[in-house]
Length: 299
Image (cartoon, rainbow, N blue to C red; front, side):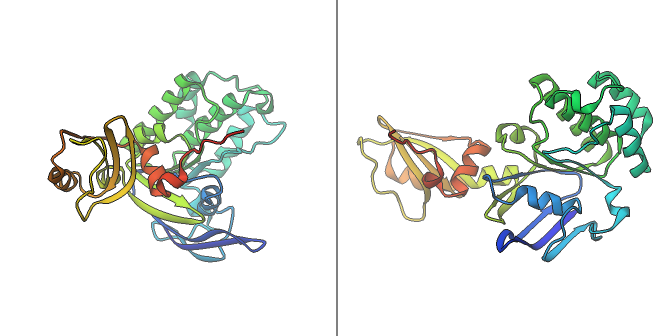
């Protein structure tokens, strides 16, 4: 389990992290989402021991990661700006990783050679961005990590390779109990693989829940009333957003779906249907609803 409590980090007076708190359950795939500048990458760099927090605590199964080699050997990380030596070949970087990770699995390395199909003798700097990302995954998966920390992990990969990489990750989660923390702006993709989600903004984690709980707590209702205009809704409904197209009114509400439908039924609608919310929609409305939506600007 990863536990982060009240983490604070400032740069030149700017609070990149302002009391961030989150918990990543063992064996889960935890998606960390948020707008640009929310503090996601800064948080991940603390989790991998690159940065030291000003205040707060980080623990992997109760142990601090800062200057703790024993914990770091259990963590593999693929940052958005993956670093490699400019003159290194794939095989050179493999030797480097093998020196850092006692549990590095050469048998797996040889098997994955057939998956990624990248010549080991090629200098990494001469590979495309997508191929460099494949090398990063190839090496990270061979480290046999207990914790895998990913920042925009499949950025630059083609659709087939994206699916292949996620398949490998999910296999490790299922068979080895690997705990995965992934930060990404591709919410549609996270929706397919994550079982827990944390929404971050302005250096804080606003909320974190299992994906199923998050979807159960926010409901989209499409309603047609007897009159063209929507009537006054019954008390107790927490409306996050309301829009209409013709006579179809769409409400985004916070609460239990069954209770919301029972209350809306008091308005005697002609038609009413609950529609599943995507993670992207939940993200938008948790961050402020209509105020966070794309605005039309006349140029």
